[in-house]
Image (cartoon, rainbow, N blue to C red; front, top):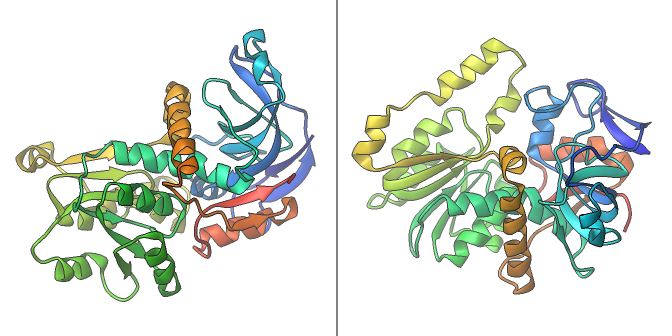
Length: 342
């Protein structure tokens, strides 16, 4: 089968090759083989391409966390009812290929009316957003802050939090995306290149602190966020995109930890604050049924027009480098994906 392999760490221009490799074997009892029609690209792929994601497989590696396709084979006969079904599935790598293996415990069947890009947006981005929101107790009129609000997860978080009636502050480092943020439901879009975002928020909301913060950036933003966080508030930490600007190695990692800083648990007790971590890959490994449940809930929200996934960044098989580069440099809004078959 054909697969896009990561052959070396570094720039998107020369890190990938399209090669012929064996179709993956079904090993575990719940394994299923999917003929891939389309696969998504996520920021974790950028981290893996740069050699900054510890969980990624050794080179040459096939990246990819989500696919849409047709189930072709199952390991356990009890899952044979899935054969021939069009499904959306999260994968533990291996998605950048004509065939991918995943577990029957974490996939869902999807209707033909749901386009590939929209379905893929529901996987990593909307699952991350839904589980992140579930880690909070946000209510109507609560003030929330979303980092990278124009990205896939940021888009999903905005739509899910609007369902709760929250007041949303959305951050972007690109002035041209402010209009997109407003159209997606952000109440207070902020361009972080103009002035420190924490100062802008403190000036605009002098009498109100932020009840929920969703941070995928890390670095110095963590300390700023803790200054903004209200008593009884929750900070959900689900990425460290700031790390992509640094090299591999121990010292850059230690420097990143220094920038993030530390907080004593006693301070959290005094203010009744919470810091929650979220790693979708860990959930997929330990509890795929949680993701399956989340996907079913998201499909229901989609069918009832409660959410509106944005998936305008479609690329062909040969444009993998362009897709990676665009995502890395924050050129896109919403979901980025590769269509192998319409």
